[in-house]
Amino acid sequence: MAEDVYTISDYLEGLFPGYTLTDKTFKAILSKYGIDVNTPVEDVPEKTKDLAEADIAELVASTSSVTGSIEDSDGGWKHREGGSQMTNYERKLLLQRANNLRKKYGLGKANIKIINLW
Image 1: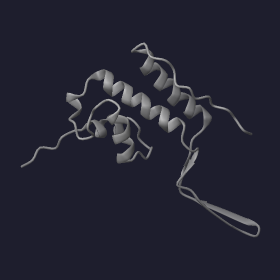
Image 2: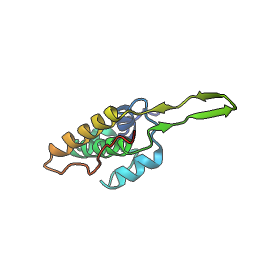
Image 3: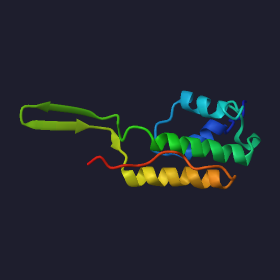
Image 4: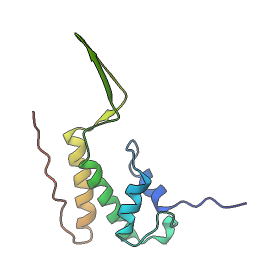
């Protein structure tokens, strides 16, 4: 019987509950570090795990604030189903998380600024 392997992509996905991250996202980020998505997490150095986490936090913070939402309107009524909306506060927390992880290794901050358009 084959043993289940807890991969680096499983690990990173578990750090971001509630966010939809694709296999392509994991491949793109992990390829920067020469790591395959199916690599067992215990074989990945802590620095690589931390920097990949920082990259994902920055990516999530820079994505659309409304996802997976369907809105209908007809005349005087509106109806919205599903989806989620990220607040500026949540974005700031994600960027702070990314910056703290990078700072741990003497690396610079993310170059993203959160602005309120309203």
